Structure formats: C-alpha cells, structure tokens
Length: 623
Ligand SMILES: Cc1cc2nc3c(=O)[nH]c(=O)nc-3n(C[C@H](O)[C@H](O)[C@H](O)COP(=O)(O)OP(=O)(O)OC[C@H]3O[C@@H](n4cnc5c(N)ncnc54)[C@H](O)[C@@H]3O)c2cc1C
Image (cartoon, rainbow, N blue to C red; front, side, top):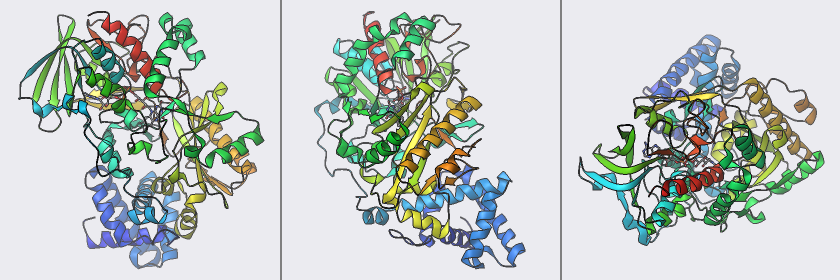
C-alpha cells in the first residue's frame, strides 16, 4: 500500500474481519506489511485492491461522515458485509479477495503454528548428498551455445518423463533429462505453504484459466514435476475406462489385460500400499460414521508413501522423503544407470528437420544462456498444460493439439464439530475416500492447514474467530467429477493461455458431491458445514442442504489436467498414436498427462506412469 491512509484502511479492515481468538491475535498492523510483501510481484491484484480501498473509504464518508478507519468496529463490519454481498462484481470481488488474502496471511504464521503444536519448519537441518547427484547439472554448467549429443532427450521429470528416462537408461541408451525447475531435497521442504507454492509451483498466472467459474489448475515446477507436490494418492486406471479406450476408441493396446503388467511395475517402483490409520487420523471415523449412516461405500486410499509419518504437508514437498515421487524413485534410478539430468533448463523449441525431431533448443532459467541437445529421439513430458505450448511453438500442426482439456474439477467442503479432535494439520491431507464413481463423482479427503481453512470460513469478526479458535475441530472433504472435454490451451510467447468452461452437467455433479459430503458431515455430528459456493455459503442441517439447488461455485480446482495431446487411432482425433509417437513428425514422442485420451475419474499419476512405462518399451525398440 502506498499511502498512509491506505495502510490505515487495511489495518482497520484486518481488525474488523479477524477478532482475537484462541491461537491468534486480532488482525492489524502485522498484516499490512505481510500484505505488501505478498502483493510485491502481483501487480494485477494491487491496483483493484487500492481502488477498492478508496471506494470503501468514500462509502464510509457518505454513510457515516467518517473515514473508514475512524468508524467503530461493528460499523466497519457492516460495511464490509454489505460490500461482499453487493451484486456489483466490481465491489464484491475485490472485497472478497482482500478478505481472503488477509485471512490467509494472518494464519500463515509461525506463532499460530507453534500454538497449534505444529512445527513451523519441518525440514531436516542436514541431508547427505546422494551418490547420483554428480549426474545432476544445471543448464549454466554448460557454455553458451554448446551442443550436447545423446540418444534420447526427455523433456520434463514428472510422472510421464521420469519412467521413460529410467527405462531407457537401464537399457544403456544415452539419455539426457532436461527440467525447467530446480532440484530440491528434503531440507528445502519446510512445509510452509506460501513459500513452497512460490518455489515449487508454476507461477500463478500460468495456473489460472479463463473460465465461467474462477478456475485454478496447479502444477509443480521442480525435479519430480507435480509428483513432488502431490498428495500421493494412487489408483490404477479404472477397468471401465480402459475398456472404453480399447473398445470404443480402438486403442487395443490399452485394454485392462495388456495394461496390467505396467501397473504392477509402477506400483512396485513407487511402493504403493493402503494408507495406515495412524496417518489418516480421526477423519476416517468421522467419514465412516456419516457414510455408514447413508449406506455409502468408503475406504482407505492407496498411497506411494509406505514410511509416511503424517507430516501433513504433502503438497509443499515431503520433508521426510516418505512419498516416493519421481524425484525419489524413477529419477535416481535413471541417474544411477547413467542418465544425466539438466535442471533450470527450459525447452524452448524442438528442432525438427525434414519432418524428423532431432533435438531441442534449451534456455537457462537462471542466466538466459542457450544450449542445444541433439538426439535421435525427443520425448516430450512437460505436463498437460505446457506440452501443447512447446509442441505448438515448435511448429507441430494438428487440429486437436491443445484441445480436449479435462481437469477433474474439484471443490472442498468444511465442517465444524463440537468436540471431535480432527486436527487436520497433524495427518496426511488425503488418505480416505467415499466412492460415488457410478455417478462419475469421487469424494476425497482434502485436509487444509489453518491458513487455507481460514479462507473457506464464510464469516468475519467474532463469528469467524470463534470457528478458527476451534480449527482442531474442523474437517475437510472434497468432491471431484469425471468431466467431459471442456477446455483448451493456446500458447502466447511460450506461455499458456488456458480456457476451461464448467458445463451444467459437471456443475450438477459437483453440487451433488457437495451435498453428499455435507450430509455425511451432519450424520457424523457436524454443527455447521461450509460450502464452496457464492450463493449458499453454509448450512446448519440436512434439511437446509436438501433445499439447495443451483449452487454457484466460488472457484474450482483442477488438480488433474489431461488430454491436450491425446492418444488416438488417427490424426483426425488426436495428436499421438498408440505408441505415443506424434502424427506427422518422426522420432517425436509425448508421454505425459496430455496423451490420456479421456478423463478417468480418479487421481491420474499411476495411469500416466503406466502409460509412460509402456511408451518407454516402444521407444527402446528403436535402438
Ligand atoms: C497439488 C497437486 C496434488 C495432486 N495430487 C495427486 C494425487 O494425490 N494422486 C495422483 O495420482 N495425482 C495427483 N496430482 C496429479 C499428478 O501429480 C499429475 O497428474 C502428474 O504428475 C502429471 O504428470 P505429467 O508428467 O503430465 O506432468 P508433471 O508431473 O507436472 O511434470 C511435468 C514436468 O515438466 C517440466 N516442464 C514443463 N515445461 C517444460 C519445458 N518447456 N522444459 C523443461 N521442463 C518443462 C515441469 O517443470 C515439470 O517438472 C496432483 C497434482 C497437484 C498439482
């Protein structure tokens, strides 16, 4: 905030929305500095917030002949509530955003964490360098303009790229992996959400879709890709989906029988097993009680973290190396077999000569230095959002490229209980589910740390703080749906422009999912549920839930983007063939989430890894 008066308005705003509570002080001065720090690299937010603050002050002067910060607290709260409820998006949206930011910032705090009995920094102080680390180079270790020769260059080290690199290197095929992100170890994984999101995720502007509902599509940008920040849930591709691919889409090689050995390989490599009760925590009993009362199927999820101790910060990097994401499984194996990993290295363009891919132009994300990697085959695994960007920029032509985006749209529901100690910050965020897949809906545990929980409580002032004082008695559970293609990705100067449209079919599916979660909570004894919608924000009974229709979601999150370079029988329907080779360009393969032909209705990392295992065999046959 630039002026003294703006700072005073923000301080008065923070005081009004956050009253003092059990683990925290009233909002105020401390929040202004943090807000300024937060907005430093987010100019697109700063201007609307500053205009809003002036508008709020003007409104206060008209209403009470006083500056906003001189009005008493209850008057300020009334003004804020009025703004939030305004039909004018120009008033309600910035008011809502400022409230969310201040709540988040206030609870993203060492003292709050310590009072909740939770260490603020979860990373170990010392981690020994693994022997394979000599195979990890930075793009800046090469001279500007240098050319490297290899058999295969794999672009991206996530769920798709890493299994391919590991398989090829084990077959003694000279493999170079290039990765835009940095190489981090567990001493970098503090568990602090905001810092981690800044370091380990793509920039926020690349994760927001242009949509009819605010839509976020998060993705990791580090060695391990999104697998290094994911929740560790593992499912094989459901059999009905594999049958649809093999029978209806004529992708015979993807039948359940033919895919089964690849799932086994993946599960052995990343050590998939059912989550243990000690890391699931009391949410299991809460959900079991409610789901049993409704006659629903519910069970523990499988995860790739057999030695998990429940640090509860999976989405910010695992501080104990328990989750065997690709940076801890496939990539080390690739490096031990002789592959080289080049980090901070962004593929700018695939070199295509006479219809054949023969390398990639790479730019250092640290210095802008450029190098070239010449190879006999190029494997693209940049993820569903970035792969179409790279392919389009490289001149690959296909009418389906960037289209058919599905994201498994998801929302989260909260609940407050009287006495149950659920303590979301002490257990893994996702380890239990309720299965409504017959309807294309999956209900998944989605535990939230205090700073995220605060943003979902639809109250301000005392009401808000009373709930946050009982954070340990809150529970969080989400709903996702198997969507039909409804989005696309374009590239502009090498950056993605994402469109996603939440259709009525998917909106209804999510609404049904939310209502079931809410009822489960009430059957388990919840006092109130918090809904992810703009028009109905909370409910206190099942009868209130039953009356709900036409929920307008505040926002949706698509953790599982798929399909933008999908596999198909012919270039009329997709971008790659059954062997993952792009139609029309020789020696160019795609192996990440973008090739998955349709949404699958469950978390997709094992699907992507299994497809990649199979693709690797096909690529290796050429050498
Ligand atoms: C927060 C979160 C939670 C999730 N939870 C689960 C879960 O519990 N279970 C599950 O199954 N799935 C989960 N997912 C989804 C799953 O992690 C992804 O579907 C999967 O990792 C996608 O694999 P990918 O290879 O397509 O992309 P990624 O794993 O994202 O890998 C792509 C890599 O390519 C790199 N890259 C991009 N562009 C370039 C370039 N031009 N040059 C060089 N490198 C580049 C990126 O930096 C990244 O490292 C979650 C995802 C997120 C974001």
